[in-house]
Image (cartoon, rainbow, N blue to C red):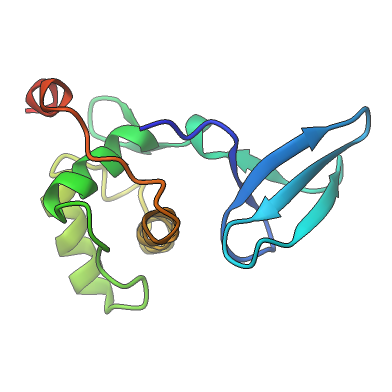
Amino acid sequence: MNLEGILSIAGKPGLFKLISQAKNTIVVESLIDKKRIPLYASHQVSALEDIGIYTYSDTVPLSDIFDAIAIKESGGACINHKSPKDEIFNWMREILPEFDEDQVYHSDIKKLAQWYNILQEQGLIEMPKKDSAKKEK
């Protein structure tokens, strides 16, 4: 899955798509309501392609996690991010059994589920090819 140009902004709900860059600003568009806003250097912006989930041995990129969720959920929506803590952790164990429960917090898994559902609603979730699914196992 290609997460290039998809951003998360601290303090703002949802995900954003990078539209353009200038010297001191970037312009992003909300994936939820399609509003465009400028961002400055003072904003904390994270690219989804740079985010990973800790496991006991390594860090797994978010794109691989989204592929695993798409396979488990058959391309549909995943668990609601407002589900109880135990349900969310059990769901995460099904997706990535070896995730490090000491370093991956409940809030991280909630964000993961929320981001996946936003991308799925926007049609940005692609079912992984069978070759990549075999590599994960």
